[in-house]
Amino acid sequence: MKKEKVSPEALKAPRISYQEIGQTIYVRIHFQGKEVKFSTNIINVKGGELDTKIGIIKGDSEGTKLLTTYRDRMMSFYEKSLEQNKRIDLQAIKMAVLGSSFTAKIPNLLEAIDKWFEFKYHKGSTFNRWTIEKNGYIVDNIKSFLEVEYKKQIILLEEVEPILADKLIQYLKMVRGNQQDHAVRHAKTLKSVFAFAQDNGWIPYNKFANKFYNRGV
Image 1 (cartoon, rainbow, N blue to C red):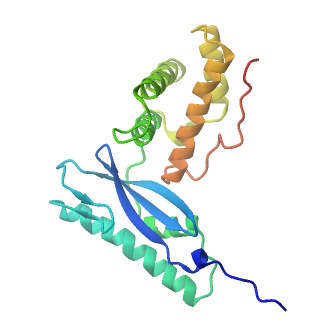
Image 2 (image 1 turned 135 degrees about the vertical axis):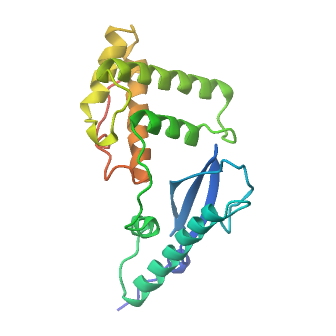
Image 3 (image 1 turned 180 degrees about the horizontal axis):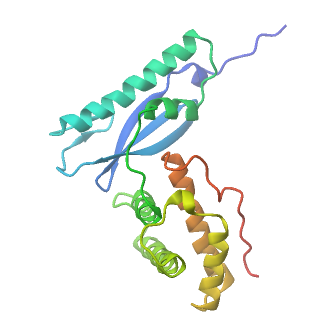
């Protein structure tokens, strides 16, 4: 029987690195050619220099300690999984890194939208000014709709159902006079926000994942 060839990439241990977007520190885990990224909710308010490879925040011992904990959890999980011959994948590593005691504040919907926008269109991103301004306009429209729909400022992510995107499209068409294609861009942005929320562990799954929106109707 021919022995299955194991790719060199599969033999490599997972790697962890760190990235500062805005003032928020993000963890990046690399494994088997794939990557997952999520927020630590550490805000670098002092503006200390971040060593993206080692995970040291200059002048912030508590933040540095937490980043070191993430690295230690990852390697401990990986080594134990190898010893016990357990299957290892990127999501399992992520959950091990977060840990069962992870109790960081979960943002509400408006806060999650802001965090998504900062993450995608931060100062060091490759998007041009026109693209950033256009998507900022879309975000403002979504927020205006949410104020009308919920009539309150605090909207928990877990409260939101996929039909909200359909209501958003109808609002933009009927109240704002937008065309279908333009309205659909807003619904897709909302879907991206919830995918981002899932990646960060704020929600267990993305209710919008299987939602598809028709253009030009």
